[in-house]
Length: 406
Ligand code: NIG
Ligand code: FE
Image 1 (cartoon, helix red, strand yellow):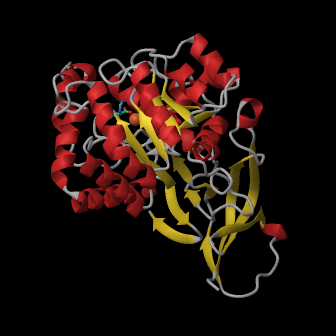
Image 2 (image 1 turned 135 degrees about the horizontal axis):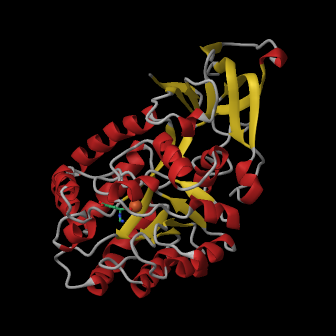
């Protein structure tokens, strides 16, 4: 039997309250906080959380972690990334800083398609090595469960190489087969003919979900419907990049098809907020993408007030959101998109786990959940959203073992 892990003398343990998922309304704002506390992990799971004064003597081998001055939170869940890519877009970043727009660069064959060229040229080994480095960076920001999308291959071999690399490095793979139309196909419909016939059968054996970029210049609502319906028939859960620049019908489509999430929502108006709140589809907010592209923030406060299930993610990618930090996402969510710290915590733990179909074992610090724990060097758990670029993540525990220390 592996030794138990006891994290002792913690200033606080904080975890979203309740047992169900996704959280919404008042449930999104309830956090269980235990002061002067411990977390006990056994066999890769949380065995107990409680007050030090009530800690019973432990039998067998125990590894202890000194939690003095630290607060424990559930490991963070990044439910939307494009972390599997080659190259970078620092040249475009420079051009955008000088006034060029993301959409102009995309229309001129740059943007996503420039990362497609680099990713096709890289080879699977190099892709996997790059992803392994980024996975360490994600962990150093407290991320213990993460999703990553394909979508920078857009041909048979590279899409599948991306999905294999993501699975091999421990991510949750999503097939973003409809991200952009690559130049060798005449138009979006011809590309979808190819992707659905030639790539979907093998992608569906690796990926857990499918995603589509529904936007002017990418795929329209009819094309997104065709893609998602085929992916649903192949057994994949459904996600939609919707309303990033324009309201394109992604919300009603996602609701009709029973998608897990709609992601972005920077352009979503009142009607979209109301219909999402009345649905089972989770709204995934990506505040770094809005920040970097100088777009309005998504309507986080309105969504939470209306009762929508809200999640947060980095959207980590080389173009619109080159950053792995969920703590930064929480800072932006609370200062720019109107969420409270408790809502931000639930949004990047329980609700993000729900989007990935894992809320039964990930996203809370409670007995029976996976022993994924983030220790912040802070006197209060709300430093997560309060300390800008604070670098407070001090220790990361994954499945009951210390995986990273500052
Ligand atoms: O979610 N909007 C489309 N896809 C990504 C950006 C990908 C890229 O720019 O490479 C996003 O922001
Ligand atoms: Fe994205």
